[in-house]
Image (tube, rainbow, N blue to C red; front, side, top):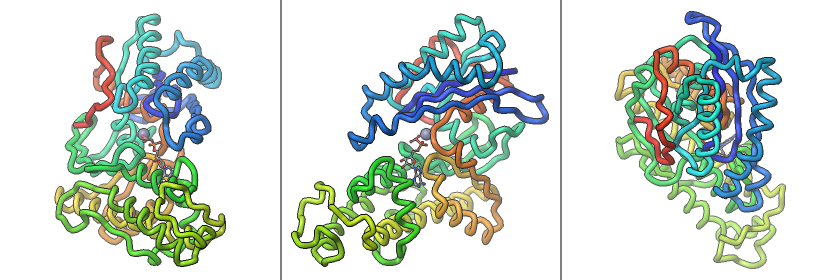
Length: 358
Ligand code: KG4
Ligand code: ZN
């Protein structure tokens, strides 16, 4: 069985081809093409939906061609076509969905609508023949979720963010600091040379006993700190106190205060993610934690969770870095596991920008 999957939920256009080895021994990735639109959206400081969908439309034919060429197969050899059907940007989802449906109709093969979050959630098991029950922490630009996973399609959402997602907080803080988009990698790079204890930033809802997250207070705390730091003389812009921090401060690029602020911010996010994950594991008596989504590229987060799991006798499975940010390989993998269980989608199934996991 060979599956072609398309991912166009946000600002990455992606096509992947995955082949089942046999039921007992997993699958092989034959092709995985990702065209990032970061450069297109960078100048706007975030993703512009109209720009994104136009780019998906322009990129997809090339990616389909490249994917089949590198997999050395023709469209006739594909047994099923899958696409992300939500959550995401409506006009972007439509491009990938319509393309996959068209290919499925043309070839007379099944179509599978895949939940983007399920793609992330299953990615720590990528290429294996199945999955183990686990507590899944999904941390991306759009979501921060703790999910109890019993099996394929059998999910209970334990907690989510009440405001900003973890990745969104990274992106917004990076924008405040003038570090560019996407913010996660930029903040991580700065944090490596900073002191995580320098600034005492809030860990919202940490002691509330529940499993929901809130990151907008942390972002606001950083915003309020900026004028204080600037007027203290730590930054290049210090001669003139700025009340309006929406204006990007012109910190010197090697300014230690930015590194310290990034390290302190990153540590605050990590502390919350670690403690809530541990709480979810304990509440559900689970012995396995999985980590996925764009923010799980963050080495400090991976290391921190590894240490926590080791200390508490928890098995930790982390998606490989190339599978953390948006890609179609994870969508193909979710589709394969569904297809193996006899699950396909109706062609009438619509995209859903707010599609929930459970
Ligand atoms: O999973 P993803 O590619 O897209 C969504 O489904 O949202 O995640 C993108 C998010 C962005 O917010 C980006 O800043 C964040 O992942 N990210 C990181 C890192 N690399 C990407 N956050 C923290 N540290 C990183 N190294
Ligand atoms: Zn994603």
